[in-house]
Picture 1: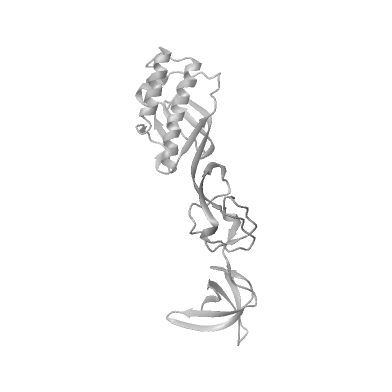
Picture 2: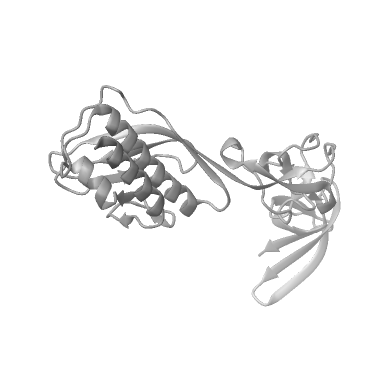
Amino acid sequence: MVMAIIGTLAAIAVAARWGFTQGEGELVGAVYSTLVIPTAIDQVLSGVVAPPSVATIDCQGRIIYAGFLDAFADNQHQGRSEVRLGQLDPRLRVKSCPLPVEAFMPPGSRAMGNTTVGIRCPDTDGWSIYVSARIDVFGPVLIARQPLARGAVIQESDLDLVERNLASLPYGYYQNSQPVTDMVAKRTIAAATVITPNMVQAPRLIQRGQRVTVIAETGALKIRTVGKALSDGKSGDLVQVQAEGSKRVVDGIVVSQGVVKVTL
């Protein structure tokens, strides 16, 4: 009987990967973090079928967890994903549940990497079971095609897209070259290294002491003059500029190479 139940559960878990009934749970991305377990599985855990042994609970629990996490990972992420589950506590004992059993992501659980998933009986006198899990998600990321020296201006030809485990990239990554092209390497980057946001920076458009164009605007009036930059600046940086004639110092925003915009 137990083996027949386990076989049924396995078949339902596969068939129901996209067929779970959504329960009322916390919305996480595009899917709910709570899913109601399919009827045949629910019958086993809710007592319609005789209460299972601890060994059977472990097998059933793993099927439920795996089916839920597979659906969760596929809805949260594009690309290939792999789910691995920890072991349920062998001392586990649960009573039958009169309501549909739910699989859920506890608050604070991560959508990929090391995480926790739970099964609960939503009855007033219900219970919750938790197990550790790991969700690995694979997708394209930018790497350096060749070594990049510190200060090098990065071009599209310096980059390659390769598949990596995104769960193993805690410092971030890029999935297309547009945000990285024309950025400057903050340090030496070895070939095949995944490019992360802390490795690159916007190029300096203004250098301290440089003669710059100052555009001052007030309403429809626009005045163009020249001045001396008192600090380095990248696009969007606030810098101080000393007017060439009056020596007055004003604050302005770097808008392009050698150009600062001041609002009067």
